[in-house]
Image 1: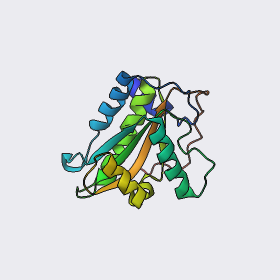
Image 2: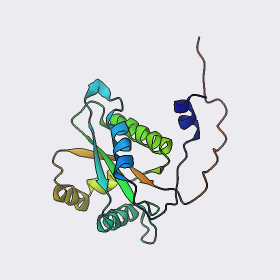
Image 3: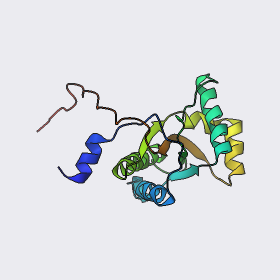
Image 4: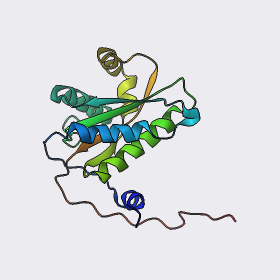
Length: 174
């Protein structure tokens, strides 16, 4: 089987990570894959904010947990690297652009041996006053919408098995 197809069929969300930080070279591969994702009109509206600082991770973890109303959970599953993906609202297809960039990053991560998982609630986090202040603190200017987060790390678990695919997934019109 072709290596790309193998990656697409076998990548799974990882929810348990070793505390060891990923290598910069690995991070750069994942970010490069995200940068080269297709975008509407080639407007490249996605913005990647890489968070590896432990205090910053604790802060955004609390923000994310607050959205779901649970103080006692780590929505990022202990991953040592979090890529917050936002998109420029002024572009034609910001959510779509950022979503496919996230997809590219997950597949790139798997292809080099990293675990990854999509984490929701980035939109709500950065619509809040606390989130807006954090973006300003990080030097992010502009009108952005939070789309999702890509967590990365070395898996500390077995590779999950694929769930069965649903019936009637494809409708053929020839």
